[in-house]
Structure formats: C-alpha cells, structure tokens
Length: 252
Image 1: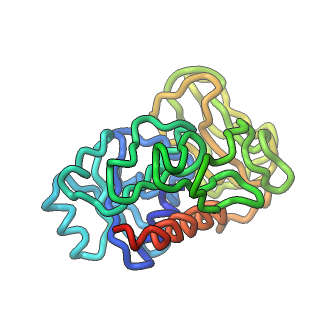
Image 2: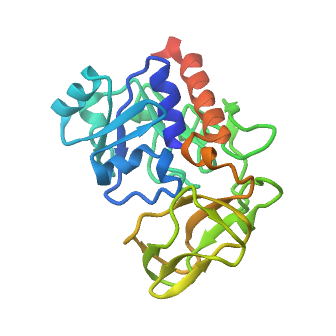
C-alpha cells in the first residue's frame, strides 16, 4: 500500500521521504520500495527509491530525482525535515503512536485511526465501495481479518507459514503454481498453494516467520504482468491520500 501512495504522490510533484524498519515484511516485493532496505535501491514503474543514511543523502536523492528511504522505525527524521504532511502507512490495523501534532497535516491509512482525534484525515483501505474515500470525521471500516476477494477467492489465495523458522522459497514471484504444489519451506515444512494461479508475492528468503503468518499471495487470475505492477487497490489509496493533501492544502 505504501508504495502505491509514494508512487502517486511523487508523480504528482510531491517530495516524499520513506521511513522503514530494519527488516520489512513485504510480500509483494516486486512492487515494494522497501526492498531498497536490502538491495540499496528499488525501481517500481519507472521511479527509484534509494536507501539513504542521513539528511544530506536525503537531499541528494531528491536532487537526483530519486525517493530517499531511511531505516528509521520511530520516524525521528521528522524532527529534522519538519514535513508539512505525514502519512502513517504502517498498516498495523491500529495506531502505534502517530499523533496530530506530528505535522501540520497527518493522514492515517485504514483502521486504528480516528479523524479529528489521532490524525487529521483517514483514508479507507478496505476493498469495496468506499476504497480510497477520505474520512474527515470518524474511522475507517474495521479489519475483518478476511483478505480482499480476487477472482472469487479470499483466504484461499493467501500462503501462511506451517510453523516457525526461516522461510526458503522454491518458487519465484510471477511463477505459475498449481493447487497443492510446494511454493516454499519453513524449517522443512512445505508451504502449499491453495489454488491455481501465479505467485504474486512471497517474503524474502531467510526471514524469520511464525506459524500462521502470511508469507505469500497467489493471484488466481493468472496474469503474470500483475505481479510487477502496482495494484488497483494501492492506486486507489494513493489517490485518496493525494486528495486528502489537496483538501488540507490551505492549512499548510
């Protein structure tokens, strides 16, 4: 979701700095700027995020037309950059510390935020009629725990760890898979595909996972190109954030 937001804002002429945790757990890695944490840089649909270490490198990245990404779990860089807008795209399904005083305009994505109390505005992230809607008073729809429907499938398309340990993939993103086929292993236990389709996303090899944790995602539509482009959902949320920024522009 965050990459879709960053991509839309950057293409709209807004300078964005991304903050990340040391080991991001992105499943859709081919369209996730957070991969720059591991590889130093990541290109998504023509835009490049580059890992930086300090304020000087943030400014250099902007000058070079890149998106700076800083490993900064507590977002301490905001005290230096003093951004006009702060977007909480952590997707933790709850607010883990973001407050209205963090910036002149603070936007929260999805459940866990209350517009007018925790943040100034909330953007709906749940698939359906209200996806991308800007909420000025109240909260987003509660987390249902059920993945969004794609091709008639919800829970079946999600790959989950059969146990705890290190993940080792046996398929690559974009590969076709069949129901019952092994996609990865966790300490020898096989992660099996629940449906036919293409492997849309999977965690990086070597990351620690726990039983029941989401480790991958199958797209039943079987269109390989979808694995390497930003989703309709992420674009809609990005559009909602852009709208929220424009709505709050006179306050900045």
